Image (tube, rainbow, N blue to C red):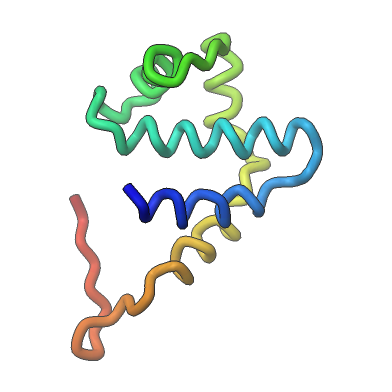
Amino acid sequence: MFILRDLLPPLQTHFSKTALGKERSALFVYTLLSVIVPFTSSMTSNLWRCLESLFGIEMKQKRFYTFMSSTLLPWQRLWQSVWRSIPSPETDGRLLIALV
């Protein structure tokens, strides 16, 4: 999981430096980890349970769903950052995409 140590801090820089931005940044990272950890399926309700069970984050369910549906998450910058972190996305001059 060394790749996560290298990938997550740059993703967190795209959030604002306010207290709410820092909270969203941390929650975003923990939500990503919840998706990756083979604890449960990545349905939203299960992610919320995973945050409580594995990471000890106590949060009302409504607050979590509000976070997940927020239009304020910097998705465009996050995707650009993830894309730039891939050393070479091409194989023999072709873009290789795998859907799981």
